[in-house]
Image (tube, rainbow, N blue to C red):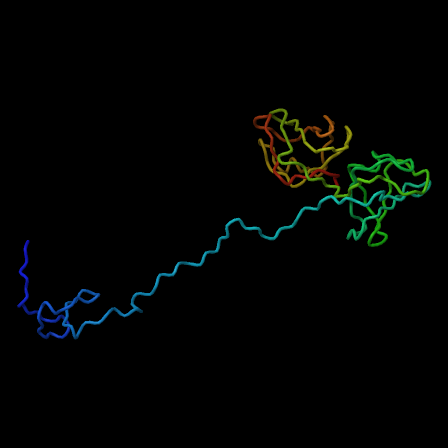
Length: 253
């Protein structure tokens, strides 16, 4: 539809009621047609800027965490034997340990008649602190034939509870009393040893309560890195791996 030009037309201001030439009138921000003396721009405070909420999530965060206890490499020949005794003194600078702590040694060499099998007992040893840099323990088997330093250049010490690899369990059978194989690299364990697992995760129907039985499980060694045990749980499928990323293996106490 066409409109007249209105160049001689008049209009009434929506605010004052005065008459103005229509071509001189202006439209306000809120839709009123007013005379030029009545028009004013919109008050900025009526249109506050848009503020979005402050972002709280962080991309790739790295929060504080409690690091698992790691193995420490000891100084060369960290052991000092006592002649005709099973007591061995360990040199570990600023060890921060407490009497009664349990530690496990790895990478030892025979010395003074003491074998690596004895020094590396997989159940670990309760220690007695001597100084801030030394502590002692009693070897589970054998006595030293002399008082000397020894043990080799690659001895490490860590917690008696060993952190296992990701998903260390595999259900070898299905059904009740499932046989489970556990992977623990260079475990140094023997068939008949008792092992207790902690910090596990359910898998294939076998619950953490079953896996973490306080009495532990008697194991059968498969090879240097694996052993198996008969669980009290029921595996749903069998031939399924699991257990999580924080599973540890160690003594029952």
